[in-house]
Length: 311
Image (cartoon, rainbow, N blue to C red; front, side, top):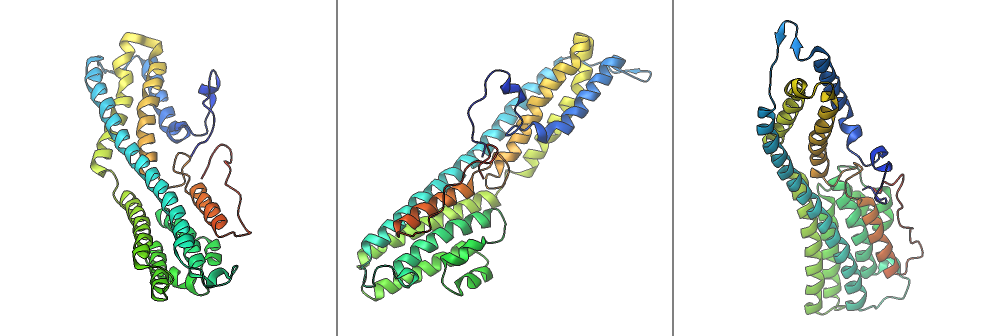
């Protein structure tokens, strides 16, 4: 995610980090070159004069802009829902730590660490956030998860097809152990179980977003229409605006190609693109809060943006 102040003045036109321009630049350059050639030849293709008016481009351009807007709204809905779900993970993780430490009796001495089921559940909640992030990004499990789990538990998690679900089952077993040992009343255990279920629901909803993209045929139709429109546009403008054709085409193509590329980028909000959600920073925030809750001496620092980009 790009984190910086809003640019103004000349900087508004010079900034590249966070812009879709680097992504669409090759196609945009080709489009401008074609527009320049069409202007130079005045629309003549060898002995054939290609005559187009602005009317078909007006008829096509308005619906194309509307459909691109609809698609980008759908893509942003996915982005915003993903952010709300990760906000839910932050909220429920904090609630779980509070419930474990305040509702479960403490028969073990202070500083018992992983021998205390409450501490194990809090650490697993940290590991759960990291595991959800790794699952959504299809990347290997983070090495620091070993320090958050019992000996041998990390290896068992690596063999599971759904690592967050494995961690949630382990937390359920620890909750059952506390209930069996009489460390928590059944009515209070149900409250913690509801929090665990909410964490599972948020994780499953994130998987739904990742595994259900916007229908490919709809995206393909908009891609093709935008490309055909922008590459034919010079033939419709050259007779009316002459040498200004490449400049106008560049502005229109930048807008349409940019909207198209931006929709592609935010459609999958859990990746590593500059405009994707900062899952690393959110996981670090959860880890800081939960380690402080159990009075861990090794509390990491919050992640800071690198070149205005927060991952």
